[in-house]
Image (tube, rainbow, N blue to C red; front, side):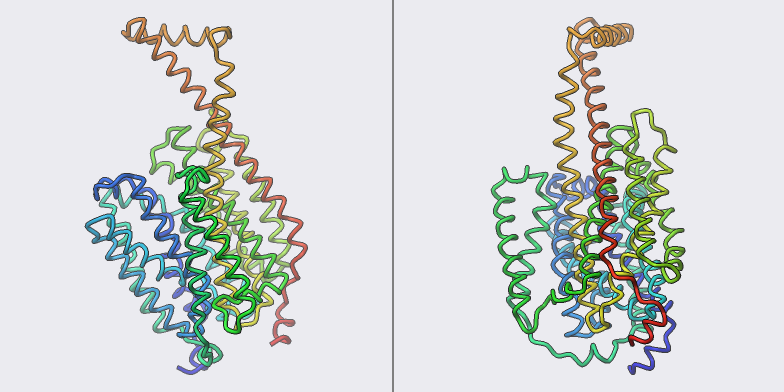
Length: 518
């Protein structure tokens, strides 16, 4: 197909084509989470064993992500995109049919491997389909899938599992995948410069990439569960990952045909943008995991209700993303980015003011504003970071950009989970030290509780034991609340602290400048 055919395709048709694939792939990073207990029960496995359904997907996904630019230049972007969607759809179908946990994990590996290329490919296609001055609109549309899909995932997964079966969590990908295949075939074409490339295979680079990134992803996903460095497995994987990744960086900078071209980091705006996106992933996914846990364990929300309570963030992003895309083309994107970081940080500090008397609306408004802040952050950041990248290096740049966002998200989930567990223990001990029989308030509360249990028909010994248990439960609930708000405060401060780094990024080229550059 000629390049002229490519030029005559409406860029919004291209945007819808790649949006199908992106939304489907990102949704699958979270949609399975709420179904794990059902999967474990159905396949005669423990919850710990079932978590490999998540880990296997993330590991395979992380390995393929940075290789996407190289794969596209070798096999063709359209061909790779179609193969990825076909593979993802087929492996989703096989996941739904899996009779055992082993086969489910195997097909989740295939699903992660075929899905890993979808995000960077779709982003690269979009950035090329739109002229530089319209890229903000394109990224606003694309960002809907990246930001809304992880929020929608737990709600959709909970509804499908409760209403039908956990297998429908995978079957739901099939019609979306078919739509994506048809639209990709009709509307997406390879640019000439991509088809002309013929490159050697960097076997050493591919091997070190698979081992280093794979080991790192397992560490981040299983570290808290295995108690980090007290586990020989985690310690070994950390050493393997560190040594392999350092060797990979040295190798990629010295070889003629690298599988991952790290020289793209010479562009200052891109390097700063990748760092900011990594931290954005850290905060986004960390808070995304933290809030539903708080709603369920501290406030007693059922899982589906907790998922629905997360919806305001998606609503804020849904309405703000297109507006941000329009504003990015008219204003200096760095100013929008600064406003986004400030709003995002402020809403997290807002959440850190919650207490045990908080109601639904106390959670609704900061979530809604956080969705607005994420939109004002994500779209301008992507636009500014990619603004100076040449078209022929766009695939490689988007691969690394998405990889670091995913790694940032994994680090965020691991860090917040560890901080929550450790802080919860120390705060429970601290608060519990003040609840003794020698404290008048504690003694009065204990006697009141015992009297209530005895009034309910319990004997004196049973009532006393229940009163002690209830009092300890109150201490644990208070300690959990203190831990949650402390982590929200930390994430908020981290977000606001990123604002000065925006000054290091170059001002994006305007329409006239972009035309002159090309």
